[in-house]
Length: 478
Image 1 (spheres, rainbow, N blue to C red):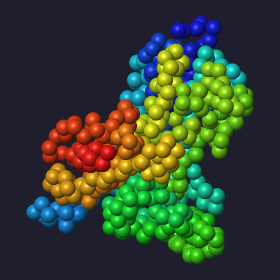
Image 2 (cartoon, rainbow, N blue to C red):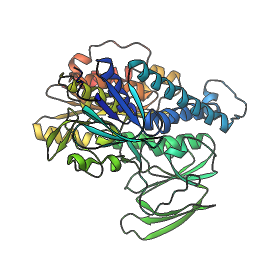
Image 3 (cartoon, rainbow, N blue to C red):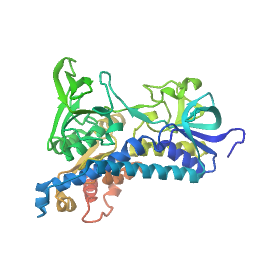
Image 4 (cartoon, rainbow, N blue to C red):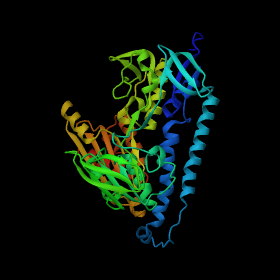
């Protein structure tokens, strides 16, 4: 399929997971492929996101377990006071990042991908400009171009960062110091995971959420049980409905809190540090999208389900976008899936991406996960299509494995179509929820009915029986 009239068959701009999977998939199928990256290979996930944060969560989670005297007492275990070395925990994360970044780079090189270190941009149809790290600027041609530039942390107006006392997740993963009192702005998955890390390592945390409840992006029933354990049960002062309208770095950091409804000042806090965890914004400003007439929506590049970039609803020939910059589901595995789908379409094997079947997880202790429709969206679909929505709950306190681990506080909610039995979504809080969700994700992907799923045999005693019980309850309700 190679075309000698172009410098490359495919040029990918951005080497995060979306760009990596796209480039490798293209090269594995015989396409002459180049990938352009101005920062570290691996993008946000490898260098500043999921990989180092999970290393911190793994280490701090061990500290939490060893320090939980009441929990250990239930097993008849009495542990000595826990000691940890902050720098070695940080080193563990840094070493993991270096290893995965190196492996990813070698994988692309072995596949035959040309790696270009520099800043990529569009220079018209099937043309990519690159300002290389050495200062050389050149224009390359490609039959197909894939944009995979990812996202960066969003810092709201009024918040000044200095990278030391007021910082985003980009800096937090280095764990350079442990503030005695840290405020976390936002209670989504990023804020919640870092609250898990900081409280395990002895920091006092104040969580500030502008919306009317903490954990606003989670299913309300899951959020209720998660908040009881992950916030109320720890040294966290959570405040909802208040806006951090101004934050000034320093020693101490000053935070002006305003009522969300009136924007009037209600309190001024002085803390040791602030983590700004208010979401992420697409990295698209310097792509020169106007060269091909593409207009973004709040910075996000519009695409169809085949990942073709759209202008006024129509696809731009030979231009694709994947990952966070599309704004579909800002998750590393979503980006990776989009990358392979885009390349399959380039290869002439039509595919679309099924966002409903892509799971999400928050790696707190215990974990939170979800897949498919929220209950609000499921109710809307039921009303639109004229079916009755079914909902059942399965509890970890009835699961032998969870009880053996003394981790019985957990919940799974399963949503399904009561006419057909089709699984529409699931939401889980509890031990290993991030692993459990994959079984339901597979069922959603295949549009399976609980009638069939209820007959499948699960290993006993395992946490997977929480899912089995939900399937059987749902099947009985049809």
